[in-house]
Length: 115
Image (cartoon, rainbow, N blue to C red; front, side, top):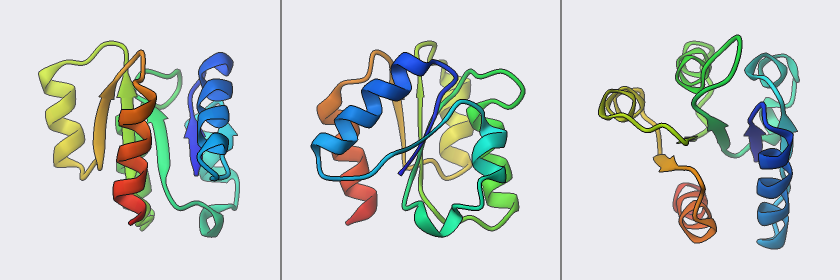
């Protein structure tokens, strides 16, 4: 499970939540870090923030698709807009969640895509 968020506190919280559910999280502070990691085969799902410097979550979603990644993408944001939701859904996002993240909603979204 890749966790991509420029906020270290959010990454740490999500990693703890994912570990508590028996999964392994790999944290990245930038989209470029995930893309350059060489860990594609170890990642079952990507959980990413929408608003990040350099490359947004929507841009990451698009780049993952362009590179042929088939892992589901879950987008999260503190600033949801109908346009962002529509773009995420059009790009195939598995879920579009609003921060602060409801832990049960995130785990349910992850479990749904991994089932």
